[in-house]
Length: 428
Ligand SMILES: Cc1cc2nc3c(=O)[nH]c(=O)nc-3n(C[C@H](O)[C@H](O)[C@H](O)COP(=O)(O)OP(=O)(O)OC[C@H]3O[C@@H](n4cnc5c(N)ncnc54)[C@H](O)[C@@H]3O)c2cc1C
Ligand SMILES: *[C@@H]1O[C@H](CO)[C@@H](O)[C@H](O)[C@H]1NC(C)=O
Image (tube, rainbow, N blue to C red; front, side, top):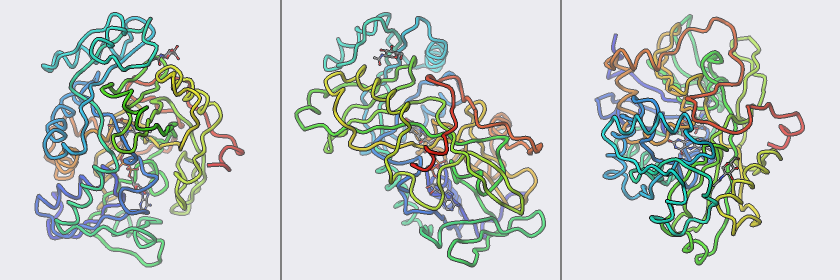
């Protein structure tokens, strides 16, 4: 049964999943929508923030490749002020990297074009300012693609929601401590400020925090991924003008050109990450899960585990040797919501009525911002093709946790997932 358009909808989480859903549902005629978040969007320690996210159509999986091409239309029109088309280069130390080969084939099969780099130094013909040590590497370049200002895009999306008449509440009155249930029906949410907000439909889009509210440990787990920022001078930034977004598929490290205006250089690792094991109590049961902190901002301390810092620094040396010893201006762990195969979770809850789940970005959800809400709303209204319903299904839990290691779609590199130690956790 399709949810009623006059019923109240509460969406928990104002990242790209929650906000894109809110806007699309409002445009489809749902007229009572409230979005709640711990912090005002762009939430400081959410996954949909900071200066940049890669926008690419390069995927091994044809479903996401097709979706990314559709999203690209949005980036080059509606979101063109937030989008920078620098080109995107995928590089590997070993010949015929499996994921690069698959992605190349998928892009070509979908009508795209790539420039094969038998020797990555060929990149210098188009991008003479690249500093990276490219010899001995190979891969391909896609000129369609680049990066988007993540915080700026979320700000724009949140502001559009607000203009459309969607309420966005943050702080203690926007922080959900638990779902309010009557039997097997979710009837609203209980708030940190005390009291609750009733709703005929609750949509949980809480990203890396989802397992705190709802036991989905069999389907998703959170991993912290290292990110580092370097302040450049105007002149240094100019020396990197016209360079592409690059990913080293042998190490997982990826880099962006300096952000115009701020001249900040960013690099991160698309890896298996770190688990932060915490104990939570919900519905009277105690569970251990991996999740970022809930009560305070995860972006405050600027802490990175030593091995993460070392590997990111090695990436800095390989990509930007001139700035290899420049201190970080900022660092943090950014939280992925991993799933076993990197597929999103977009589904009605299998056993709780009145509850819909939209999460599982698995380190690649941001680029879909212009179109994600449409896909989520189609699932919400049971209109999506069967193939997508299956792909994004939330299977019932059989009570067994799948562990914290969820490897995604095969595109990651670097060391295996590691649990943070007690000493490290205290520094988060
Ligand atoms: C380092 C890093 C690099 C990435 N790079 C890319 C990239 O290059 N390209 C790309 O496409 N994708 C990338 N991704 C993935 C992409 O950013 C995520 O898939 C996407 O942002 C996830 O969005 P979300 O809405 O699920 O989560 P979030 O944006 O984190 O939103 C969830 C929100 O829920 C709120 N919340 C949680 N629990 C509660 C509660 N109980 N009460 C109230 N509010 C709550 C949180 O405060 C948060 O704001 C990257 C992610 C990271 C971490
Ligand atoms: C890519 O990663 C490999 C493996 O860590 C490393 O040897 C190589 O120098 C890196 N190259 C670049 C350009 O980052």
